[in-house]
Structure formats: C-alpha cells, structure tokens
Image (tube, rainbow, N blue to C red):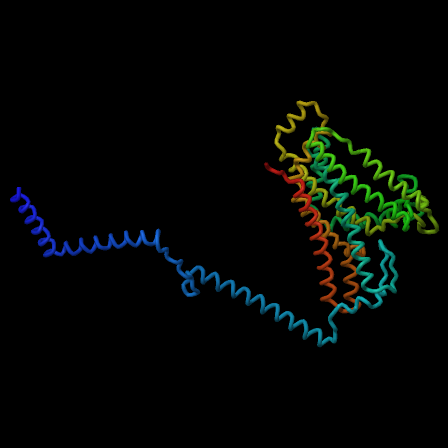
Length: 438
C-alpha cells in the first residue's frame, strides 16, 4: 500500500516537473490564479462592496454623441446670430427712416372708414378701437362659419352613407368638387356672383321681409338694447344651470337606476326665467322690417356682399372636409353596433343620434379641430374682396403709420390667441367624450 502511494507521489511530482520545464505548468498556474481572482472580485462587487458607476466626462463621450452635441451647438449659434442680425438690421433701418417703435400709435385717431362693422365705429376713433372692430369682424365670420360648416358637413357626411343612390352620389360630387377647387377661387366666384345680383329696386324677395340684391342679404331684425341683453343673459344662464342639473340627474340614475326627467327643470330655467326677467324689466319686443327707400334699404339686418360671399365660401369649402371626417368617423364604428340596433327595431335617425354618432365622436373630434383652425385662418382671405377684418384693418394701419412690425405682431397675436382658444376647447371636449376604461 505504501509502495503504491509513493509511486503515485513520484509520478505526480515527475509530471509537475515536466510541465514546469516545458512552460505549461506556469501557464496553468497563472490561469488558475486569474480564475480565483475573478471569482473573488465578482462576489465582492455584487455582495459587499458595489462599485460606483463610472463618471461620464465630456471627453469620454462617444463619437456619435460628440457629433450630435456639435450640431446642436452649431444650430443654436446660427439661430442666435440670425436673430441678432435681424434685430440690429431692423433697429438701424427704423432709425434711418425716423420711425419710432412701440404701441403708442394705437392711441391716435384712426381716420379710416369701416363700412361693415359689428360694433359702433366712427373714423374719429382710435387705432385701438379700429383693431377691436376688426377682431369682432373676424370672430363674426369664424364663429358663425364654424357652426354652419359643422351642421352642413355633418349632413353631407351622413348623406354619403345613405342607402339612396342619388343622395349619396350628389354628396360625393359635392365633396370631391369643392375640396379640389382653391378657396380663393371660390371666394372670388361668390363675390362676383353677389355683384351680379339685381339692384335694390329689383331685389329678389324669396320670403316676405327678406331681400337679396347686390347690396347684400337683408333680413328682419330684433332691436337689441341693455334690457334685451339682460333677457338673453338670463336665457344663457338658464341653459348652463340646466346642463349642470341634467348631469346631476344622470349621475343619480346611474347610481340607483331610477330615471329622472330633466325637461321640467330645463323648461323652467330656459323659458320661464327669461320671461320673468322680461316682464320684470318691462322689455318691449318688436321686429324691425327692412323697407326700400330710394336706392337702398332702411331697417332690418343687412349682410354686406363681402361678408356674405366670404361666409358662403368658407362654409362650403370647409364643410366638404368635415363631411369626409364625419363619414370616416361613422364607418369606424363596428358593424355589430348597427346590426344590434337594427335587431332591436330602432329607427335610423334614433340609431345615428343615440348610438352611432356618440361613438364616432371619438374619431371625429381630433381632425375636426384642424378644420376649425383652418376656417379661422382662411378668413384672412377677406382682404381679397374688401371685407374689413383684422388683417385688412392692420394693413391700412400699416400704410398710414408705417408701424409694420407692430401691425404684423398684432395680427399674429390675434390669430394665435383665437387658435389656442379653439384648440383648448376642443381638447377639453375630446377629453370629456374619451372612452374611460375600467
């Protein structure tokens, strides 16, 4: 037994001596030491002594990161240099022409006539009030145009999906034709058409009290003063309170399942309350009918040819795009919703109003915002036909005062404010109708 162990020890020592002489032993020993060292470091790093993350220094960035940083600094530097150059050049040119900067000119007398103004205006008023009148004229076109374009576009979009072949084809022709014709050409077409209408003495009378001539569209009107505005404010307040009450009743119904009609509250707030305010203030209501005197009409409400042509062009052009948005939104509703409503025997009008359109609104509202913004900005084309909106009045102010920078800045501020207001309201409404997942 001892002889065999001694033989094994002798063989092992001989093998080590042979490996050491040939160099393989040293190599294996070094590899073994490195393996043990790595195992020890791994345990130390992961368990007892974690290494701090290496610091990233500017000169330690990669090649792509340095390249991106270089281009960012270069672009910012060029932008700053361009702004400084433009500012310096502008100040130099204004000083050479002895033009003072600032908004002090808004307090001077305007001296410009405004033919069609929603607000009372006199040429002796200031430039500031002239700008206010221009903003009111722009809002007059934009707000009424948005409402009419939405109604017309919705009807045409539904007509495109009608089972009536003739109705759907006519709606398709309307959409494809008006979308492909530039808005400026349509605007000029409607303006020339308004100018080709007969004179006031030979005006068309489609309905009693309504006249259409080259003087514009003349309608009966209700004179409005402070008492009438108070009654109108009561009606608006009644609508707002009725909406709040209706939401509360719907929440109560969702809680206990008992239906609670909201129409008695709406009737009392929207009808009874304004009538009570009218009786309390002793408001007298009358209709002012237009009458032809000489070569023009007196009384009533007159829509000037420029305003009427601009409104028609904006409404028809924008409604073609809205119709496609409505059509695509309705078609995005799953077919099973239609089949389920048909299986219940619901009328098509009730089905669209209560089932399909509420679901389609989630698809319709976002692109509709863009169309509302486009209609508002396209109203600046009014200068082509002589309608005095904020752009036209700003151009006249620029020519009279030479305050080009201030006039352009005011135009930009007005349209930016209107656009942001529309976007804010539409985003709020889109969030209200968004599908809430539980």
